Image (cartoon, rainbow over all chains, first blue to last red; front, side):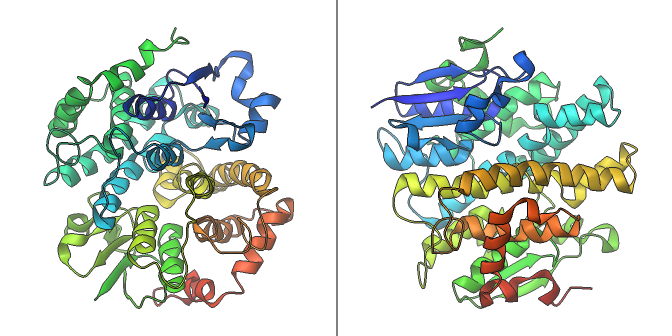
Length: 216
Length: 216
């Protein structure tokens, strides 16, 4: 078995998949795709053949025909295919839906609005560096405000009780991103404490952007 | 059993859930939340209690405690909880991941970039009506270009072979949206033919925005 992850150290979607692979104790080969160098290596012919969206990550399990994209889809694949040593989702449909809901609050309504290609589009619209930051912070804060409320009656040490779930895997890279943009995390005490608890785990530490071979 | 869907006729995330409910033959009560009237009814205190994100849809199955948000999460809940008469996802982890990937290509990387709150933010940045449309079209075309390639070796009558899946449920509302923005669908012949095939099914027809009680 051979697992390949194509991504970028600072891409929070790649970061999610790294956490998931580490939690599953799956060894993998990491192939850096530099999102800025060479006009963006994600737009090279070779990469687009793997992932025509020109976005990271891309993921290959075993065979070239098995290329997957979309981090949430990759993570659920890993969860189904490699159930040990822990599951990212519980069995009950309702509990699953709540956890997926929080993961999607970030993966649909926060991260895609504040990633590199969208911030570049803001610049093209005439926005300066401050406008780019304000744009990113706006969506991150909207998302965190909702999630902080949503988790109020659910959280334990992690987003949903005392087991790490898909929600934590998606939340922590967004907190990393929020800090980069200067978001004041004291406004979100529950998220901040979940972030702290997750970052005590080796699987999260090893997945952190600054610990990747392509970090600069 | 009593199912409640809170949404808006033109919201493509709500439209997805309507299609899913119809395909499952589930009767439901539809509660219109007008996204513009009264400064946006999704920001009312009552609605925010159900869904602190202030986004539609929200979904309730049976009991007030069971409020769900995020359309993909709601649709997978329906699929697990009500497996008959058809499943939206196959059994194999890899096939599931590919289908979820296409659904997320839209639900993460297209729709959230071109919805009402983001288009309003473009106006706040100084963009006029043309800039709003150009912004929406840009992300829709990027997404459709990738999906058209991705489905090339997979599509049958629908996105993945000859059964309707989660991918179709998410794709068709995005095509509706694309047409509103004047996207030339002849550039995406595969997506256009899947759209046509899906819209022959009653479940899709009944879910269409113009057939909702709150359509104006």
